Image: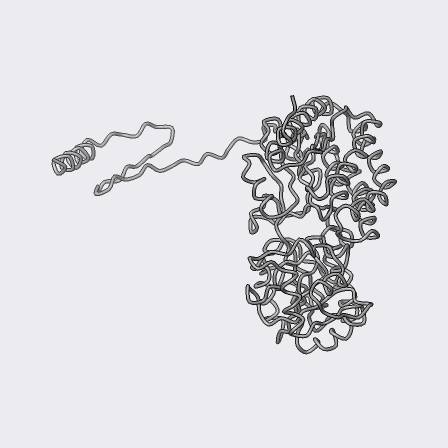
Length: 499
């Protein structure tokens, strides 16, 4: 009997989860040494295949560029490995002798990994490594436009893990992709947690599945340039961050907010590093092809270079252009390019001072990036402090390319391709996700102290002129007959009044 494609995809998802569950049952008894050996072999495989997977991703999705996808695959392998290598994720991971506490790590179980089309191979490497580091199995659901490269990345990670001693089926990936299969994966009884990276609708579905989920929100990241900044370096880093893999990282810059007193000088530096400023007519043309009429970025331009966007919009740009910059005067539907654009287009705003800049950044975040990230180029610690205390973001990135700084490539943040946005964006986590987020922590606690129980003075009944006194806590309080009769009278009056 020939099965419908949808039925095949549902059955495939169930089979993969079943295999992952069996594998995880065996993996949970592995020692720290066994786990670390597996992760090391996965790291080696990721590095060795970084270039090949990058080529596959660009070829299949048409997004980003080969060189930067190579870096992302390497980053998800080597840089991540160096960060998680010393982590204790098996057995007793912490002993507090003063408080007499033990903390014991346990895996959460089978994880459903949702993979985006913008980072289809590096996200697989990253999620597979953090899952197995915590002794979890993982099953991936690729984006429909990145099935082949995502499956290849999962296959490479699985083969490396099994060769190092992991059980078969510990890493799986759906080939017959459908929304039904993704929903089946997320809601399957044997799936313990969802690790979701993708569009807002998919992340919302993950949080609505009834399972614990770690997801991310959109990142409409402003880059504020204050008058004390090194303007040449700020321009270089903004262009570098925005053009990294053609703007496909959610932490990439989306708009520049510059103090008016330094805006012209900053513009000259931006042009020197390959930014092309659009005139008002071209801003309108670019807006129409980059953003959809009903909101959201046009999928056709995601991860595309400026030349592609210019041809689509019917405008001319210099050959050496690395990104397009649209001067804007407001935020909202009237200015479509004020929203998140996962491509090589930036908005540009002038503000009178950092106070106005602070407000403009807040407007941009409210338009679609609340909780995510904000970049600042400044040497003024007081301004940094003001932004840090008042802005609803969980990553404030100082004097660094936002795209690389947000994922931990150029900062001290944890290397990660899942950037939590906290409750501001409906996320359950506010930091970069690591293996420590994929653990259950048991605690063993010893008796430390006897609670200090202070004597409580009895309350005086309302309306009574008498006060109950206790002469000694060891003695039984004396009954005051007059007080008792007074209370009885009050109760009777109350009952009579209710009749």
